[in-house]
Length: 325
Image (tube, rainbow, N blue to C red; front, side):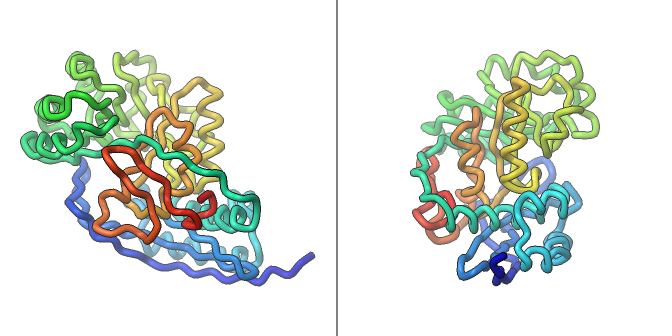
């Protein structure tokens, strides 16, 4: 068997945002990501992840998790082997995507990726400021609105008035109750909302068992990997696939396939990140019902050669940026 000459590098990269990003859990002004570089036989593969405190992750803990399998990575671990070495989550995502990058750079020529229409996010603020932000997105095909329990109706009305044309996703980030979902059905129908994303806390979404919503409901925090479909309440009709949750592109593709087999819709989501997090998700985005990959567009400066966005249309990275491009 050929000898594999390999090296691993893990580092933290920080990207200031061009505006504060607020959701029901708090506000972000800088994106801190973990970058993984794997060198094998002269070829470099790159991956990125965003550790998320909601799942008990931090930059330091995620780094330690990756370092715990340094020997296996430098010995030539495969993506399939990685699935049994690390659990789903940010650490496995960064390594898995770096391994994909290596494989694709050493394999077939990349196919030409097409632009995708992504949701453009209106972050949580006063209704007046949310309306101002929505005005700038009035020509976008899809707008995502971050809300909480404090008068979401006023915020949604303000956004829809400012942007009457786009499709709408409403995202309470687990801050609602089933009573809120029920009470807002009529308003969301009147405002032509296309999707309600994770309204209930993941540990309380049993309230959606048997619930028949007028608005399709997507699972985000409630679904990480394909195995989670076994216990997902039937009130969900869409699953939001994020590589930082699935633990990489390998498991994300498996979740997408399993969801489609069950007749569920597919959404592709992301954290606030650089384009290095977005590139591996592109193949899922091209086939998704809803795409929410505007994370890099919140950065004051992205990685060189990354994605570009104009009026909600996201152009792929430049050739050579990552394995598929």
